[in-house]
Image 1 (spheres, helix red, strand yellow):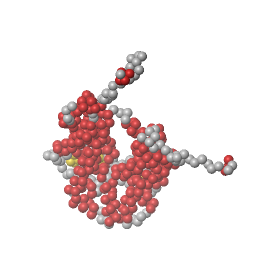
Image 2 (cartoon, helix red, strand yellow):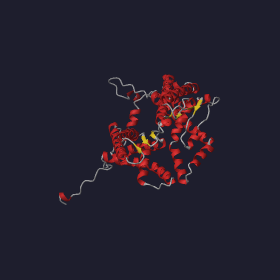
Image 3 (cartoon, helix red, strand yellow):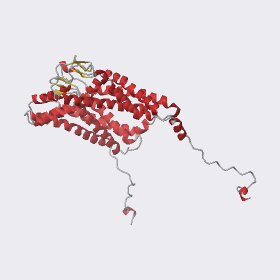
Length: 431
């Protein structure tokens, strides 16, 4: 066989061809957009069918685009005024798909488990740019006689920023860079942050339970609101999906109610345990669960909910710190960190849940973010401190010293004594 006829060398085992970063980011971002856009389009089609307006592909697509942009935090100018309350259920779906897009792009460029912060940032940035460009193009293309308008430049910038943040979560975890960065922080900060995140989630879960109980209690009024629309099965299904899309918003509002500051459903209104002042409400069945008066006997007890949440979160997180002689100071610091972390997360959720529902009276809805954050931090911190004290009192005595002894290295075997000069090793044993 001549040299020209020799077969080409086989590729190295395990080596894969890597996709170009722009192509991988564009494909992943487009897939994420399609998945989050589909449920909005389904709701629009159901509502238009119930109105007897037919499918109307162009008009339905434009209206669905408005709802999709709204879910990403882009305000939409409609016939009734500016609408800025994002359906957080769709927002969560979009964030999840963007995080998965970050995972896919990181794998496509061969950065999985690489530990490279630079490559993780590159994957997230490329995904965000592709998602922002897609938002700009869709907003510009959907502009027309559809009864709404959004700024394409703002839409592109908002989707690019949100896409970058969500994709960073997936890319940093997939590349292993997140673990390396988190390991640089002290143990007390990690434990306190973990407890704060869990406490905030528990407060929001309590808000979700409160919404469910309130809607179930006012089921008759909710049924009357449904019947007032006089729609068929398609309209009822579409209206139900709209309520489900905004159910996380109501959970955040209920959490603000449990924390104390409450929330507003229009200018000059307030809904809190000690005061309820309502105006004209949107015609949605979920608002049937709003209280119609203060709760003087139960209002004070509601403040225990975030404290119990902080206690529960710190019990399994902060108490696990084993730091020898500095165990108590470390636990106290972690408990003090948990409160502000929970407050910051609750304030962010409050900011994302509110906005405008139109002009005039409904130009202001939702809770005040900084009040929710301040009350959340002030009420969660006592619970975390109490859990720290209880965990320290109930811990077995000597746990710290036993942990220190267990961590200390055991003495190894005694090395043999060197033989004196001129004496053969082992000669004593021979004698």
